[in-house]
Image (cartoon, rainbow over all chains, first blue to last red; front, side):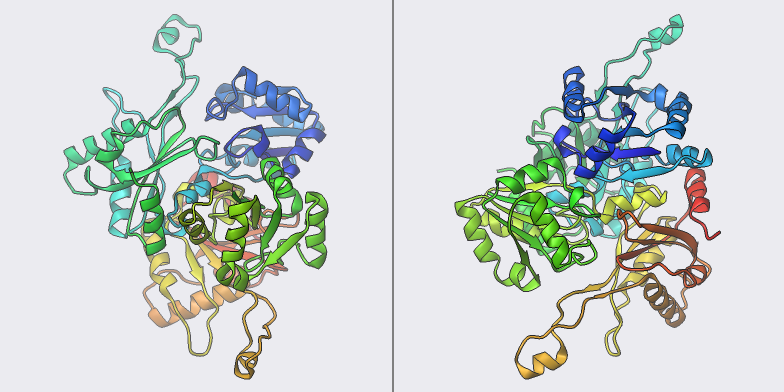
Length: 273
Length: 273
């Protein structure tokens, strides 16, 4: 049996009792490390917090491992119970559908244990979840790669009066260019997009396209460290939010659509004072 | 302090450790009963399961209580720690934004403890959450009241190639017409919309509007008892799903948009065999 267990958004105490039961019953425990684990408060020390709580040794499965060596994990799961821990929900922003498909093809039973993820916890900022349109991802722009498919999606959502959740890029364990050239693997330090970078990229694309999907006056909500003790939520125009220090990652950004009265009260509550 | 604690989707063991800590530390504990509590496996017996686990007496706050008597709960929360338990996530399909706004106006601190809700757990059916458009609600049609605003929303999502999550109506503690006439409160038995009723209503509206937003051949996924041990997920055309017995509530329905290869593999997996 392969258990895919959502850890939620805060720290080790955000696992559910059902999730904890599963982890404790498993022969082997992996934790997915290639999205937001470091922000989850799990450093080398954080991991040992998890291990202490679960009473289990945990193997960190980084991007390479999940993508290239999933076979090992799956073969273990065909013989005994294995838990694969995932930040947020197993089918949240980062989805593990592929792993489920592979497991099932091998005849391995899969049990999913859900938890909160950014996709639903973002409701805390006061905008109704059913008033969101398509979610967009904002990738880090480079000199040569500036994909802006998010622009049209935000535009469509705005036209329909819907809110847009923007998920901001995370780069963890990217091989450094230098290391690739030298034929051995070294990694860039992890990089998490801030709300400032996201807004600057959004405005850059608007500047280029000039279709008025949004402007620096557009109402947004910046959310930092969602679900953590020190979570920060600030509502204001894009321009205003550029002046706010949101602190450490993870950040996400919501471009606000048409609002209802209760939503407006919450926006006011989170407004820059 | 008012803790608003998500219980998740299954049973009492779906609370998080953080949620359990909060409940156990509270002076008074309420559980919201006007959405899907009965489906949550909390009957009079289920409630005592919760009480046993939490080591606390729990007051069931029905619709009237939350809407009319929230003042009592809030005044208690201004003096000591009170927990308000909510099925799913506090800001999932049913949102408690209003309660948060009222608490904050009274200067009461609010702490939200997130959990899975239908809004993210529905990812388990294999369609990527960021490929969903606006969520719709399908209300029970009556002889005289047949609101169909969902039609246009599904149509728009379909045109954009996006999936549509349809939340199906729940009627709990509706005063019976007879009791209203007699001036005393009696209630209709709870009513939960099935996938069959939802599809029949969808097709009835299509039949009337004839704008081809969808048809009985449209690909859908029916999901029953999401997050429970006996959850059931079946993919097929609307017509096909009318022939499937989904069993007890809660049900929800997804109208599938354009699919990616991994999504298709999952659809195949859940297809009618």
